[in-house]
Amino acid sequence: MHQGMHTETERCVRAVQSKDARFDGWFFTAVLTTGIYCRPSCPVVPPKPRNMVFYPSAAACRQAGFRACKRCRPDTSPGSPEWNRRADLVARAMRLIADGVVDREGVPGLAARLGYSARQIERQLQTELGAGPLALARAQRAQTARLLIETTDLPMAQIAFAAGFSSIRTFNDTVREVYALAPGELRARTSPTGRNGTTGALTLRLPFRAPLNPDNLFGHLAATAVPGVEEWRDGAYRRTLRLPHAHGIVALTPRPDHIACRLTLGDLRDLPVAISRCRRLLDLDADPVAVDDQLRTDPALAPLVDKAPGRRVPRTVDAAEFAVRAVLGQQVSTAAARTHAARLVTAHGEPVDDPEGGLTHLFPSPEHLAELDPDALALPRIRRTTLLTLVRRLADGTLHLGEESDWPESRTRLLALPGFGPWTADVIAMRALGDPDAFLPTDLGVRRAAHHLGLPSTPAALTARAETWRPWRAYAVQYLWATDNHPINSLPA
Image (cartoon, rainbow, N blue to C red; front, side):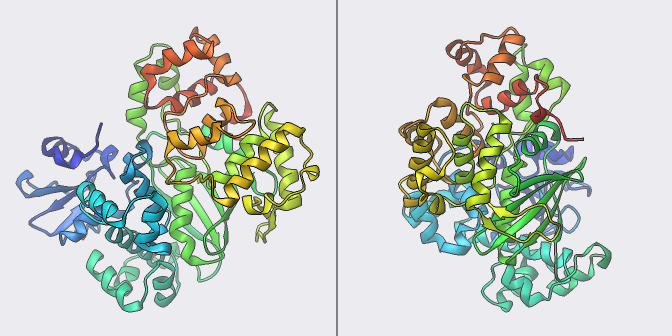
C-alpha cells in the first residue's frame, strides 16, 4: 500500500521521472533549486533526484516554504485515496477538514467530533502529514480562493469571504505566499471567456484518477433518483444539496478526463464543502488501479474488471438522508423505494427554487422527520418503527453518521436498532459512510451474480470466498451488480 509513500524516495523518483498521474495526490515533489512544488505528473523536465524532496501534503510543502507550480497546479490533483481507504483518526480528521469543519468550528470542534483532545489530533496530523489541522484548512482555503479567482468575475472581497478568510489582508497574503502572484495577477492569467459571471452557477472541473467507468456510477444515481430531489437531465445528474450556510443545486456530467460540475449556491462560503461532497458522492478520490489489480487476482472477477475497469462506488452527499432511504428500500423494488421517498419529500421536504425547474425540495432532515405522526407514514407498521427509531436517534445525536464515523462502531450501532439487519447496515456503511470493504452477501443481485459466475451463492460461503477481495469488497459488489441488465448499470439514454 502507498501509506507514507513520500518516505520511499526511489519509488517517488521513478513516479516523477515517468510522469505517472496515478500518483497525483499521493505525494508532492518539492524542488530545492526552484523553491516550487509539483504533482508527480508535472509536464516540465523532471529535476535531478538530488534536488527533489517529497512531502505527504500540499500544506506540508507550503509550511516548508515552497510555492505551487503554475504549470501542473498541484493543488488541483485528486485527493489522497488514503483518506477513503482508512478508518483511523488521521483519515477521519482529513475527511472532516475537507468538509470544512475547521473553518466552521475551529480545531476544538474538530477534536470534539472525533472524541480526542486538540493536542492529540495536532500531533497525529503533524506526524503523518507534516502539517496541523489549521495549516491543512488554510491550504484548502487557498485552493478555493484560486478556484473563484480564476473561474468567476466576483469582486476579490467577496472571494476572500467565500473562501473562508477572516480578512482581505490574510486573503491577499495567503494567495501571494502560495501562488507567488497577487490575486489580481492570478486572474489576469486566465481568459475571461472561461469565467462565470458574478451571479448564477459556477462551472468547475472535478479531476479523478483514471480509469473511471461512469456507467454504474451515474446509472445507479439516475435509476434511484428521488423525484424533486434528484433528476437525470441532458446527460447530467442533478440534485439539491443541504449545506452548512444555505442550500445548493449541483449538476454533474461525466467527461472523458474530468467530471463537469455546475454549482448554484445560496451562499458562496459553501463552495469547498459542496465540492468535497460531490467528490465523495462520485468516489473521485479512489485509486482504481489498486482496486482493480486486487480484484483481478480472483479468476471469477478478472473478466468483469478487464471488460469495464475503473468502477466506483456510488455514494451520497448526506449520510442521514441515505440511511432513511435505505430503510425505505428494505425488501422492495427500486421503483417502490423511489415512490416511498418521493412521498416523504413532497409532504415533508423543504421547498427550494431551481432556476432550471425540475428540482423542488431538499430531502427532509432527521429533525423534521423525528416529529412525524407514525400514522402519517404510508408504510408497514414494522418499517414505520424502524424509520422513526432511526430518525429520532439521528435527531437527538445518540447516533451520528458522517465523514468522521468509525465504520465498525457505526455498523454495530445500526444493527442494534429495531428492523436493522446486515444488509441495511452494510449498504449504509458502503454508500453513506464510504467503507470500501463493506460487503452485501445477502443482497439478491449479488447472490444472482455469484450463482451466474459459479461462485458460492450462500452468504457464508460467498463471504469466505470474498476474503481475497479485501479491502475492496464494496468495489467487488459493483462488478457483481454490473452482470445484470438492471437500469442501475447503464447511463440513461
